Image 1 (cartoon, rainbow, N blue to C red):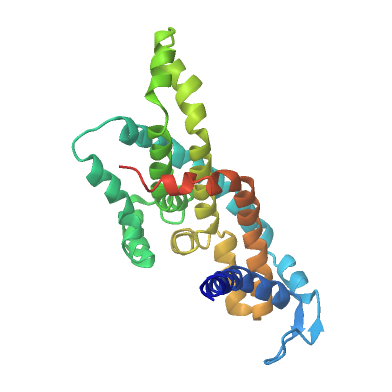
Image 2 (cartoon, helix red, strand yellow):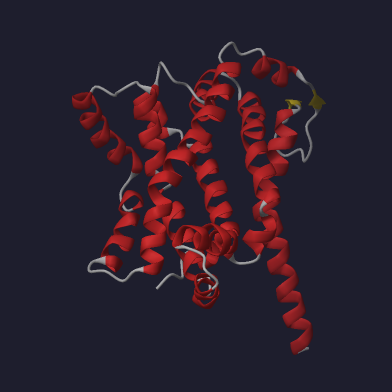
Length: 269
């Protein structure tokens, strides 16, 4: 009876997790094609492609998609230039204030984002970068600092120093050792961090809405308009479109994420 109860408990837990993860996606998929769907019916009464046509005919959709795929790579590039050297320093050097600086990276996530963005907006007004491309990129980069520092730092720290010493003994200089030994071994962790940064930028809505509109409207900010001005079926269609890049990118790096690279980033000592 004890073994049967454990198996039943595990099965219920797995079922609950499947409902938690797949349930909202299934609801969105059905809602996006539903003409009418009233409670308590389990399935829509009528089906239609009308909502897809409504979303795809939106005049600002094409520009929003292009801007999202511009801001995300630029954000990853800028964040890499800033964070990867810092990650290497955190991983390989012990200096005063190291742990405090590492923990301070979470400061951007320690407060309500809208309050933080409103404070940033005041600073941006004084710097005259409100409503500019640079201002939106800065907001996006702030949302990537944690993953782009902690995960690469853990990846750099995991590189065996004996391999680097062997390369140095063979005559390789510091730069060649880094690009021949250190970076290739740390690359999977860095890749995971870059994908997470890309997704964070791609899905950023509040800061972009406050700093960038009406000049720069990305897919998440355009979704606000759809939610406010169209039926929920149109919002479901746009949610599916917005989630496709995230799903594709996560499938590409699933081996490294499942391999523990993401968890290792938050175990840095």
